[in-house]
Image (cartoon, rainbow, N blue to C red):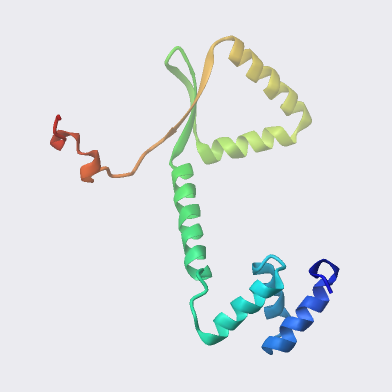
Amino acid sequence: MTEALWTELEKLDVLRERMGIGYEEARTALNLAQGDMVKALDDLEKAQAGEELGFDFADQGQGIWDNVKSTMSAFAHSTISLKRHENTIVSLSAPLGLALAYTIWRKPGLRMLALVGAVGAAVNNFELEVATKDETSYEDDAFNFETDKEY
């Protein structure tokens, strides 16, 4: 039977019978192998033999979580300013600005008023500036330009 004709349930049954695992494990292996039965069987055999599969979900999850935390931290330290001719008219924290924009966008009457105001601000040369307090330290030698030599 060609693989295109197999139903997902048949694939799961084959994985369960051959590897002695439950439906959830079989479904997870099949999803990770993107439906490829041979790859799923190979990955399951490697996992049962204790071999490294080439991916570690715990490390990937931690890396993703660290990235989300750093992005949220940078967002929390950002400000949105409305300026005209280098004069700041109003300045808000980015989370507050986002909450305000969402609230305005949810109300149809305020939405139209906000769009008219945005067009008016653009025509009158107002600028919207987003600034982030960069807390990154550049003490690495790659950024130490005083020690660079001229060639």
